[in-house]
Length: 410
Ligand SMILES: *Cc1c(COP(=O)(O)O)cnc(C)c1O
Image (cartoon, rainbow, N blue to C red; front, side):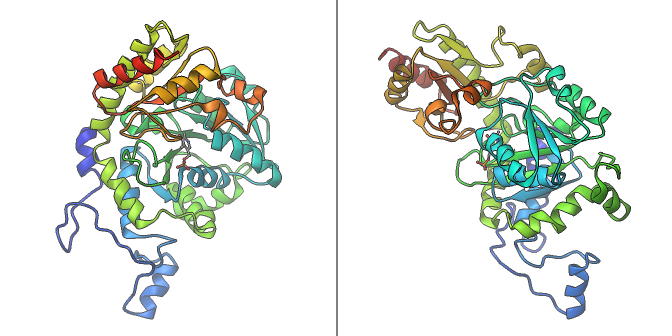
């Protein structure tokens, strides 16, 4: 089965009792069981069933099964947001005293989270660039994971997933990959050796910008060694390749209560079905808009991995099968000019989201990254005159006309 077919039929069957072709919404907090014996068995993990929606829910589970299949994982855990998914994915691996080695050009919320973890005795170190060397020189005895995004947002650098997976494994630690901006349509990081994949499903997976959500997928392949991961190594005896997911479900996911709501799981499943169509359209629009902006005399620089002169063009071509994502940035000289352009756009909304079917723009330095120092912003690739664009499904002629009119205001 190929990708677009799998979006509809992979790990999915119409509802058994009604034949409903879409996922039914089980908008229920708790689930009744016939006997006390049955509920005891479910609680003890000796029988399958749902108990309480914070722990599991049929609508949410249907979504988890589909995404696990698409990402080629053994299990998935849906979360209330991308940030809760990232928090839980890393905390499931970490203890006080441990360290994270992370890419630097990452989502602002994740960068901030890793800083906040220092209150709990967990330190994060950020690689200066996406080269193997920058990561390997930060790894110590205490490092428990390497964290990257498939395309750094907003830096738009593209790390080599396979070589970073090899680096992680040679140090006995897993590679955690945020696949939000590429989705399994462009890359399945697990096929390149990644161990854990996380998503903000609020973006491209959902597509319509109607629900916050996140998901964690486990490859089931990492061999948890007792010296570095004592709890997971112990759990492996009982849960085998499902130990990471089991630890999450019986631990922080259940206890912090960051579950995905059934209605959000329904909307996100609905969006997921058209992921391939949307990605084709949006990636096609993005390369055309990037080329248009690159040739525009009011634009000083365009950053898009699809452009041939981009530093990461080659690795992006290799990893993403000839598509380059939906996000690009461009600079126009000053903050004032950037504001003028944003205010002059008609179709492209000024909004803090990405991956929506609508084209969205934002001035990162004064918004998402305003709380960071100048030095941190420059490490994350955010300059004062930069505009970020998340390209939508509009007709490209309307988009280029919209940007042309706005640019000609400066
Ligand atoms: C948006 C985003 C997140 C955070 O997800 P939320 O659903 O907003 O919590 C994490 N990583 C990346 C790459 C994102 O774009």
